[in-house]
Length: 109
Length: 112
Image (tube, rainbow over all chains, first blue to last red; front, side):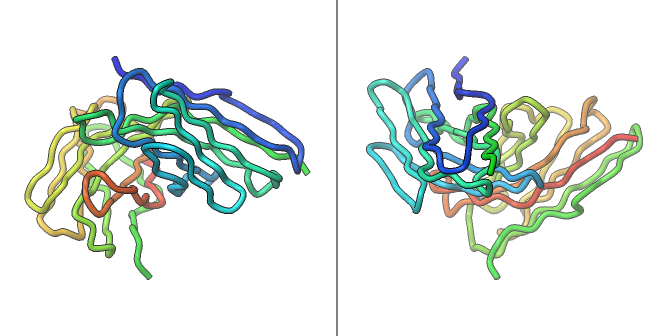
């Protein structure tokens, strides 16, 4: 069964720290998404990438297709970054997305 | 304002009842999706539709039904055949089947 694995499951850090969340997947993909889910349940799409690196504000997403691995980085973390971060992939030739279980991030003041 | 709306925010169902969750988008997106989220698990795809009057089963379609009579609307019916319906349901849409998905606020369904 094709799988998406995220690590760590839970992460608590101090304000200002550099945060890294990892995502690994089992077979070839056509795209990888990073999503953010806040406590109320709403989900926001952060990035969609198929190669290289993307940056938006303090968020950076990278992907290594050969190693089947992606990372989401948060620079100068802030308590408002506290959320669940979800990695999702579209397998090659497939419809729909397969989601990781999420990384629960807490940034303490 | 463009976006996706889901209603209601909370829904209670009695045993044996069918209930319908609403999803509407005014983004002019062709593709729409329904996902289910359970505690400690990733989102799972229930149904998706890439065009009006057409839809496909996702990974966990049993006990659910959908319709796509209008581009803007993709209602999900949770039937009495769904034995464990308590979950958080999220609707999403995208321009086509391959682009970024935009999510609604979700509906939390509870069985009484």
